[in-house]
Image: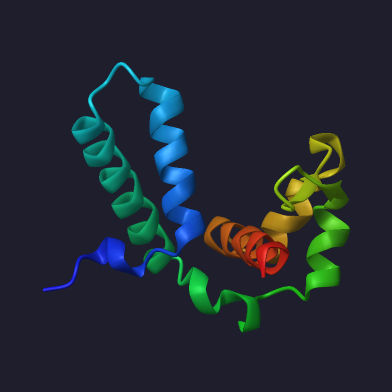
Length: 121
């Protein structure tokens, strides 16, 4: 049977390996780091399946993107050294009362996932 980790793209595998190396250092054996990276990937992929991240960019959510961004502004400040967008937010600008009046916490999370997926597309 194929491994659920086989669903991970190269960038996700790279990020998991780098994270594990940063968290555990190179003094931990390569086999242990590989096991930790595999565990990390499994958790990430499980969560992505749970929130249906792969198709969320095209999903219609309770608020339109502009309605959501009025309540939770997100700004792009360029790209990092690897070409990834740098998104920033000011917590004081988030209107949590208005968000939660329009949607539940799960929908807020789904909007955030949608934004992050759109940025990485």
